[in-house]
Image (cartoon, rainbow, N blue to C red):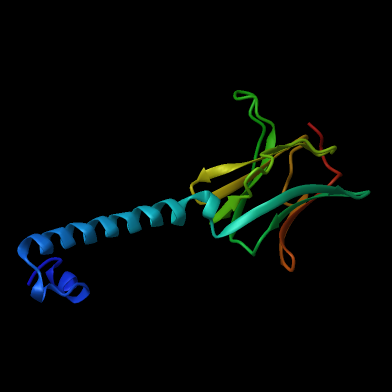
Length: 169
């Protein structure tokens, strides 16, 4: 026996089936298998059904710093990077964070305009099917000493704290 025959014979009792019934069962089994794979592809890799979810993004301010809080439903792996101002593409200084295996809460605002001296706007989008990116468009260039990124487990969140001092552009 080769191919589907051993599987089909174990699933269905073929000893009393005719050849036509056997072929029909084989077709039904193949269709069921295709449906299961399609369902896995849609639900298993769609960002809306991602492992983690961003529930909200907020900005808080103190005398010397501003903090962006990314609220999540569970801890997440992430990567971050700063990008310099681009006159050619008319882009400001930026700090972005890629959240791996993460999706957005349906209906969540994807652009936030905080009342902030450091942040022009916050953009949230997908870079890949299962990677959400949070981009902070900044009013000034940040060096490695101007900000910190910390992850907390209870409640799950990522906080980006930025110092107010520094060179404004």
